[in-house]
Length: 592
Image 1 (tube, rainbow, N blue to C red):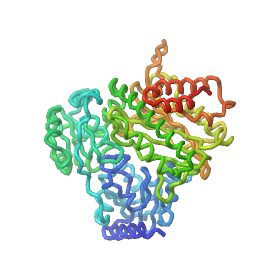
Image 2 (image 1 turned 90 degrees about the vertical axis):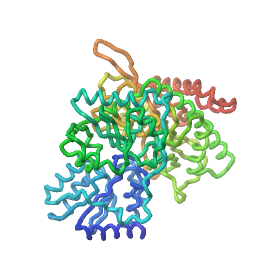
Image 3 (image 1 turned 120 degrees about the horizontal axis):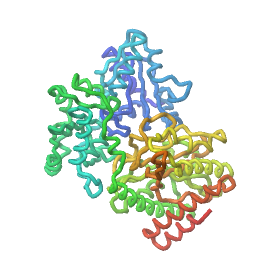
Image 4 (image 1 turned 45 degrees about the horizontal axis):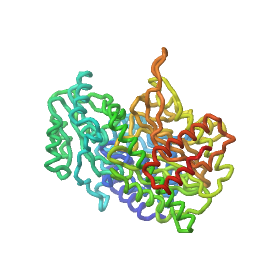
């Protein structure tokens, strides 16, 4: 039994009883609706022991349940074992939604209490409507954890820094002007931005508040009459304040945001209610105007300098991977003990030696054998598996460079691959190639392309439950919008300048996992009388494991794509490598 987690849940229940709360929801979120959180906001992890980046905990006076998606089913089952918390596999037909479960299990007349700073306005509205149908009231002023979380980490205090325009390509003043022009066109007076990556992009500032995500905890109010960054004063110095002032931005304490919004003179302030906390929206009152922020689209379509920087970062990243896998192979061949954590350390060592390296873009996923089937596996001291010259190693990793963000997954055979390993790998790669070579009309959405990556798996009764592609930032969050490639609908079209992942996979629980990921750039293809057509340029530079291809399952065009891609990889990376490293890469990029 996990007594530490059970004691924390018991303390929470005592806090709930004292406040007349029957049930509470602890989301994996912060006041900025972030996917990745500073330690101060990791309340769900503290209360449940589950470390995945997605999932919400529900605690009632006699039950505790955790909803998470397919990426974390295996991990959550293991981490929740012994806690008394029930795993709810979100997205499966038999799993009720959190709102449905609460409606069916909280008695009428009781209260569900949540912290309105940790739920978007639209999420609160939807939950309140659902609960109200069952006679249950939602209260948004309940803080589930602050009074019971002993040793809670403080809010981050590290200084912000400026992202040089030689990498960003566009100044903060120009970006603010683009935002205010959009507001004027919509007859709006101002915009309140909560999303940390949007703030970082707009102001060309970066920080270290969230591991692997170079953002700074803040809110940003933009108006043609003057803009304000709400940030802890400890996080700025005189040079940062002067830089912001030059861009027309003043600073105010982070904690003053609600008072500021409540005191605003009558004006029309744009907020994206799906990405803005309920308490923020409430503070705006009648000044609030709901709508989509213009920033995700502006940020998502990279400019020429950002694109060239990303191409350069991919070359250095590819060179670091070559050096890493040479070391891994040599140490395995020599019989040295190499574990999953060792693999992550080796990759970090070689990436950090590259020019313009800043940090990893996420914690490296190195899953050997059955661990590869855990989609977002993270090795611990207890789970850290030793590699042997047999089986598959799945490595999903990336880095933050000042000129670009990388994210790559490769599946490597450490010994002679089995027929099933080769078949599974080839089916995944056929989908990867089909998506990577797609040509599509302007206005196409990711959901319209997603089946291209899944079709060959489907033909063999195989599938995967995660999305096929996510947007990637520029020296920013490795997961960003507004675009995606996944089965569920996203209205944002794939647009020139967008960088998106291409990462189909297949996962056999207890056996192996396979994922093949490159980042691709949306670019123009050609124009006909039927309109403009687009395609993808592959940005990532590192070979796929030639030993895992089953050529009898591939078409001549698919084989040609692999050969041409490998030729490009060698041509681009060879100048950055020593002669011995070039020879290693030459052998791994030979034609199939």
